[in-house]
Amino acid sequence: MGERISREDVRHVAKLARLTVSDEEVDLLTRQLAAVLEHAADVAALDTSGVPPTAHPVPLLNVLRRDEVRASLDREEVLAQAPATEDGRFRVPPILSVEP
Amino acid sequence: MTAVETGAAVRAGRRRARDVVEQHLAEIEAREGDVHAFNLVLAAEARADADEIDRRVDAGEDPGPLAGVPVALKDNLCTRGVPTTCGSRILDGWRPPYDATVVSRLRGAGAVLIGKTNMDEFAMGSSTENSAFGPTRNPHDLTKVPGGSSGGSAAAVAAGMAGVALGSDTGGSIRLPASLCGVVGVKPTYGRVSRYGLVAYASSLDQIGPLAPTVADAAVTLDVIGGHDPADSTSIPEPSPGVSGQLAAGVEGLRVGIVHELTWDADPDVVARVVAAGRALEEAGARVEEEAHVPAAVYGLSAYYLIAPAEASSNLARYDGARYGLRVEGADVNAMYHATRSAGFGPEVKLRIMLGTYALSAGYYDAYYGQAQRVRTLIIRDFAAAYERFDVLLAPTSPSTAFTIGARTQDPLAMYLVDVCTIPANLAGIPAMSVPYGVGDDGLPVGVQVLAPALGERAMFRAAAALEASLG
Image (cartoon, rainbow over all chains, first blue to last red; front, side, top):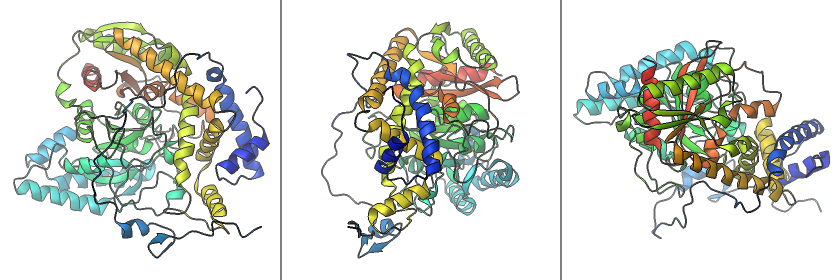
């Protein structure tokens, strides 16, 4: 921390998030992210040694159900929502890039 | 006529569900053009459902406590075969293959679904200006925002276009619009209401709850939708909260404190209403102290805007163009992901995905996300300490009354600050509700927030009912 988020950081994070960002968007996001992170500096600077993190406000452990066969969503109805299907499955473009 | 009265009249055969629906559809016809509370009005379906309710009453059956009550659903609640957009282009054309648990329970209680309401995209916003389908306007003043993100639900109830509505509250998204639109809005204890079929924003914070004209209407709705659901593994294994029976119990001896840290920064006219609410509860027999302290609450806003975007960046990874909604084609699957997500998400959603991805990324995880989670523990501890001395707490819901449309859209932080009073309850998982309590200097509604310990909805509703009664 300390150093402000850079345009390069923003481009990298956008790639991680699978977002394509224009130069204008990079400018805007760099400014906005810097402002929010600056506001969060009070939290980042707080001494929390010895304080455990909370991931969940109401801890419920090992919520299981019986291993019984039950009806699930209707396959046809689910596939009807897909942009493209083939042979009862979701169809997507090639996984491996055609580029070398 | 309130929702409780409507339900009773329809059940008893004194009023036809069809007439109730027609009356609300007429209100929609008259006001929806100005307000834009709905993304979809289910006129034909509502008429058919109402006729079925009337047929059952004629046959001597009891449809349930919400018989014939028209209910509006925030558009992030799944309705089988009915478009569910989350206010986003990325879910264009999607018709969920199942109903949310709350939807099934509402139907089971005799309610009639009248439409899907507008919202900030994926519930990310405080004004309902972030919807891909245009903003909702405040029925009390069309130049003002209704609050958000459940602004459509709040406006629909405030304008009489729905008997009650459901919203979702991740950082205040039920309570804030309820406050700004002058209706009752409830965020239950985390886990009280099943999230099955609620499109996820920040899963450790999201909770569904009612928006309603009166405390009794909110109570009956919460009793219908609340209680354990095996379909949600975070659902608390307790029965329905049973708040409807508590409304006449009064507040004699109830220990009430006004939260200093959530009050000092609000506008003076809002603070004046919170102080007046404290006085009213005292006159009704409660023991009121002005100063309750939740010191770590001042870090709530910062912690929330790390935790919620972090969870959102993970939850919204599912919108990839593969299985439902929008797809923008690309040469390979990665190009399709990029093209679909870049075209489908609006600016605020992209900002929060970016913020969350950054906060979770290598080198920053502990400094931001981990630290925010530790602050969350501090807030939980401070509330627990406060509840050793108090049964319920009071605070403003919003630091100000409704602001002008467009006033905060250029500055995300200015918009985030609107949530400052509501966020701590989400971080702590405790119940909180907004009760209309008069107006501010501008004549617009002010909501007073009532907070209670986890599973403390009964005490919270006793206080809310007493506040409502004190207004006469």
